[in-house]
Length: 337
Ligand code: SF4
Image (tube, rainbow, N blue to C red):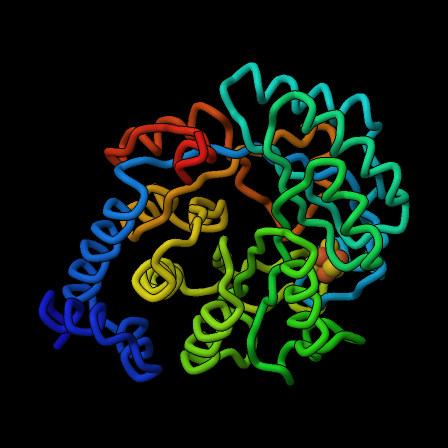
């Protein structure tokens, strides 16, 4: 049985794969003990604090064909767009006026914009005194230096699954090995890196999820996250069932206990699938929430999954408060202010 002594012992000697499996397979009573321990680890490292970052999804043209994603190249039902730089920078300005200091530029693996184009956008946002985080897929290695010089310091590249066979099945034409190499390349170019799985993919097992945790540990990620699978219309997985939210919450807590000092977001898929899902993520050890500032007119065309839940600023602030946490900025949380 998992109790505080069991967790305390693993925290001092280290969690083995079997221990991680037990965390993920814990019953509801054990899960409460795990969440409490995860909160204590978070609070001990970061204090009882969380921060809000703002995301704008600025381009949705994609060269990839991920089976689970509504923006896959084959999906002709969505209108493809790239936002104008001025609009992106204006949105960042609004985020800043609202006290947000981390700006997250997200796009599909688009070839619709050049490295210089994105570099200029990064520079303009960075000049506002904001931390710039990128999640734009794989590009040329030289682009990484250009964007770093422009002010970007963080890069998220989800590995989606640590099962190499499943990875290539879900992302046709790509290998897990390349993905891992690219994460290491990002690190070598000076970026703080983030990764994580999509929970609920067909054929994924608890052992695969344990491997996801081990991979993130090995990569020494700075940011770790989990999204729960939700089907997107018009994709090969449109009829696949949604992922297991309870398993997702256990995964959040396992990340906190095993990886300890990573930034862990309460992702919107939890809220979409369960009332107060993001609050539950904070109870399981999360410390970040992302407000979506993609213009409303374009949101239906950025369909990672159907009927997304869009996190607004009020919801984010209320969720942090209800979790008993104090809102702060990323720099302050990391002790850089
Ligand atoms: S998950 Fe990303 S890379 Fe894959 S199809 Fe969707 S936008 Fe493109």
